[in-house]
Length: 437
Image (cartoon, rainbow, N blue to C red; front, side):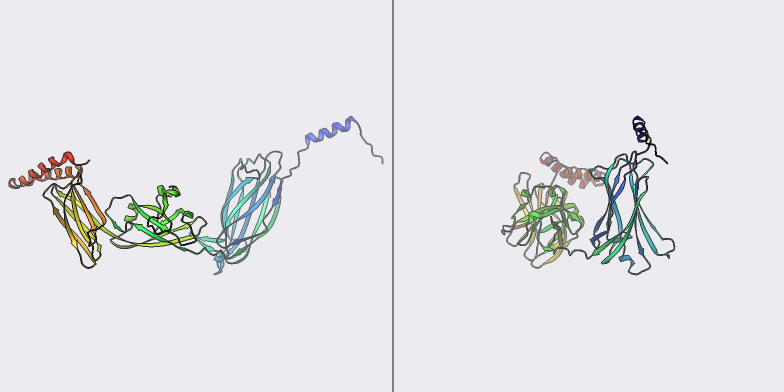
């Protein structure tokens, strides 16, 4: 039999015809599957998958991987993983233009007993429309070497456990299967905790005070620098963070040596109201914790005294004092009176103890002249002021409240006693023009 060879124009046309009619063969591919990974127990790790779309129209992919866990085994909880998230991006850093979704199913494999579970993670393009872009892409699944049950992680045991993988890329159903062995190692030892020196200011805190901040000064031992402290990690009693305003202050404005001991300290401030809300009367140990920028933790404590101290206006010549707290030998409590202009008008000592004691006082203090400014002072036995517990200034709002009380009580008061109300109203009228708003 002789083979007839067709040459010339006919052959060229035939080649052109078939080139136009035959669809391009897909070159989509699976480029990389994880086979072996090592990770510390309870830490996250990544399962990386690299694939390629090379389609004449649209590309699809689906991948699934699973691991088994026997919950009937008392040690089974130590041989489990947790899927956390995934990222799907092309090699050039761009994302997919179509949705990519993930699902996790916990099921009993066929033929296995109850209590033996298979965790199946599926990730892939969703919907009927595929990805129009061709190129290499990665799908990275983030896992944790710990099982999750009732919101609590159980760290994985030290040893090897397999994750089984199956991948399909595009409509050509290019598939690859494999096993990735995850070698779980002991978790890294945490860095040693630094013993910090902390000083809370004020040392004595009036739980009725209206200030804005509680100040804390932090010193670190030799070899550490307070400028490396991550202020966003600092907590007071594991609960209250540094106020955001002070987290964002420049380092130059919060680093110094406030106690002049030649050791650099970092100043931070906490919201006073939040601190007061968690305290009671008496000595309180305040714990300050935080981390350096490299994650090294530090902790320090300070003890401060908390008390209640409050002054209210009884009438224009009298204030009422309430104070509850523990006081030390040699301390005394006094109220000093001043005019609006700052002129001293007198003082009264309300407690002068010789032994440490807990006191609970409620008493009226009167002055011949109208009360304008009363300062409640904690002082030592040499009359040096330790702390101004209360700085009470009579405002027009206080005077207005007294007017309201007088007017409400006037109809019920015998005529013979109304003279006292009249005198008080006269005193208020004289004080009103000078009282602050």
